Length: 245
Image (cartoon, rainbow, N blue to C red; front, side):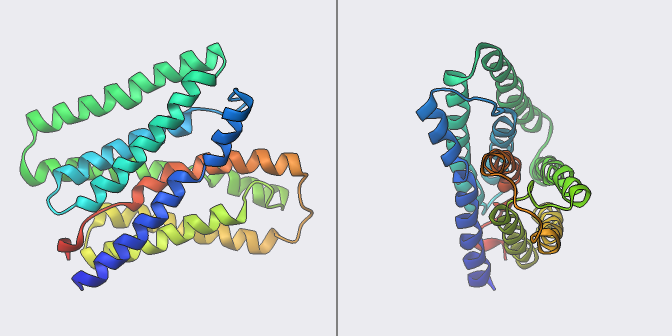
C-alpha cells in the first residue's frame, strides 16, 4: 500500500508540474510583445497564494515532503509569472497587481503563519492549515462553473478547450485515489469536487463538441482565459508522502 500511494503521488506531482507550466505559451507571447495586453494577473496571484499555503502545510505536517516540494516549485513559477506582470503590464494594471500581491501573497500568508505558530500547536495547527487550504481549493475549483453555464446556454464548447478539461478530470481522478489510499480528507474533498467538475466538463464537451467551431482568434483568447482559471486549482493536487499510508 505504501509503495502504491507513493507511485500515485509521484504521478500526481507530474500532472501538477504540467499544470503549473501550462501558461508558458501565454507568457512567451507577453515577452515577445512586451505587453500583458488584456490578460489579468489575479489568477496567477491566487495560484501563488494557494501554492504558498500548501507549501506551508507540507512543511508543517510530518511526512509531507512531496507537498512542500511540488508546491514550492509552484511558488517559484507563479512568482515568475507575477513578476512579468509587474514588468510588462500597463501602469494601472501594474499598480493593481502590486497591491494584490502585497495583500494576498505577502500579507495573508504572513498572517496565517504567525497566527498558527503563535496560537495553535500540534495536530490542531495542521488541521487549521489543511482546512484553510482545502476551503480555498474548493472555491477555486468552482471557477469553471461560469464557463460550463455558458456552454449550456450557447450550446457550444467555445469556452471550454478539451485538453484543459481533460487535465482537470485526470488531476481529480489521480489525487482523489491518492487521498483514499492515505486517508487524507483535506486532499480528498477538494479533489473529489475537482473530479466531479472535470467529469461534467467532459460530458458537456461530448454533447456539444459537434457544434460550429469558433474563430481562431476567439479560440486562442478563450483558451488563455481557461488556462488561467484551471491553473488556480492545480495546487490542490499535492499532498502527503509515502509514509502516510
